[in-house]
Image (cartoon, rainbow, N blue to C red; front, top):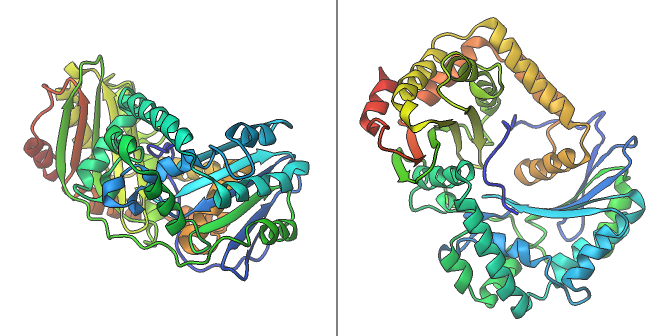
Length: 440
């Protein structure tokens, strides 16, 4: 499974914190493996997982899609278990196992009842350490992934995000599809897949995560027992990504036109990244947001319009997505440009307050989910080598002023746009005119 794009804004603050009064604990084993838990005594389940700090941008140039292929093949048999035995072992008591790949991370995880915690940890360790990459299974899985690529191409609201990354990061690993291409998936040798895993699946890149009804000491003991043979290593390095302005329009016979306007924005390690996240919520993050109300509700120009802040390790993107009738796009683009310019000049106290409330609620509601807490913990430890207390994030968000939000909007939206379109594209005005309307 791949994560194609961000469905909700990620709120990040980057600074050193104390872990007093937190349920989170982290231990680093002798081999360098980090073990992190977020104990929820009231929970009735446990999530056990391995978060790996490599994804699409860490792939060899000639092997785009190999990170996602490795994720698939981890489920296809080990020296001890067949693919069926892996699934059966997790599911026989009602557990669920899954994985995902992003441009910067890969994760393997299962949600199970507490009594199945040890077996789940052992199975994940077996997959990471002893997967066999059987040639016959690999050939079958190539066809499965090729079908997944085809499904992605037939889902324009997903595919346009791939096109946007390709446009924003031309001739860079960050701009390549998480799924790769059918040609690469068909031909990548088994040895190259095995070498990719050997090179990257080590303690410098892996965090073992447990959330829910689990004690930290218990997971540390399980990690020592089952993951001690993971090789040591240093965290993966990345080539610095460079965002470029661009214009990519792909004609497709469809009833709806999918349009994106994106801009360079703060990355994960910038201290004001949370302001960009709040701006995204205010502008197009909810059905009461400015764009949704003014573009959809008052003018009926779109079925869907949303904004996202997508932060990565070294860069970020601020994205606007709209799905519209191709005949309405000539009217839509000037309206969107005006609203983007307006938010750099005027933000009401009520809409800022509403955006803060939405951000706070999203964070607090996420605390109810054992899976969500695992995702956040794994991501934080990979990114910062420590968790960021949720209350610190909420406090920073609640302190953001209208002036700070306008300033962030002006900084982001003054940059040259990245325009991406998929569908009947004939009625979209030229890129030069869009850029001029954003500068006006």
